[in-house]
Length: 219
Image (cartoon, rainbow, N blue to C red; front, side):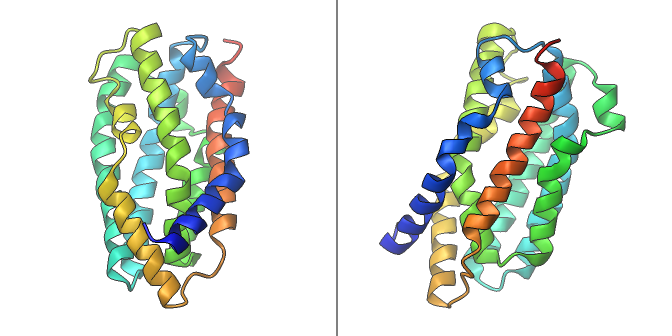
């Protein structure tokens, strides 16, 4: 990773890192204190999110005029398609959440709504940087949930597949992100909004988790 891109990424991640622990749901799941019904709610909400994000990444790929950025977003869109297939096993194991299927929670859907906004308005290189900066926290959340599902809730590997998928780092995606951001820097296409985008990404993601925490913490 080139020094300039590494410095940018480190700076954005360092700015957001103190807020990663504001997630109130994952610690509950990690110690087995959340009700099993929360997994049905997550599956229902993620069906809406993953479909929306896949379209958003396709739109960003179509707007990107630099090959690495195009391939980065196209790869994320492909990943969302793979993740969507893994939600079936989670939903089947967790049971139905009719409220989430028919009436998705606004707090949970703020994140994909913002990604859809970025798909129309964000500078692709800045969006690449912001998304990459948030990967680490998202991966940690998914790893903690997958471990807790096995230890405390008795889910099998197939049911945990959605979280396992996102918990595993993908070096090829990170390498493509680095190349895309470097190309953006070289072309003067990094508009300096990555920090703002990352802050909002984090805020909306935390809203997803904490919306469910408010609903299920006392259940």
